[in-house]
Length: 195
Image (cartoon, rainbow, N blue to C red; front, side, top):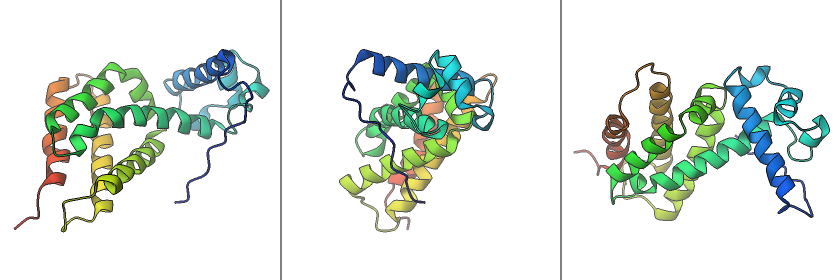
């Protein structure tokens, strides 16, 4: 799948607090709206009104609502990924799994919106991309598992587990979720070649 280049208007005042404030308002508005309805039912007018900005102001920051969603998803995946690097290395898989699960628990409303409100595909793409970059940079000790397969299984498994957990009326404790993530997803992908 070809990745489209993210549109970034060139602002002479990119560090202007008003620009940052508007971008944050747009992100927050989209996340609020995703809690109410799927992305397909949200219009740019809805986002602008919820953010408290003019309709045309939206287009100074993003070309489409999908691009705004990509921006939100990429920022969250990056934050989550940076917390879980230990789970992707061979140092402390438990610490990485706990960091991931605690982060999602602390930002439960946001992640519920992202994973169940129409952004799951985009999150998966961003997570796979970052995981692939990490794997390329750090290499792999597996001659039996193609790196691409490990990346896809790890990212998909992580996001499916989190989605399931966020949909539960009585979710498992974070520590138990971390144990499941470590034992079911992380450790099997780190094992040496099966006999």
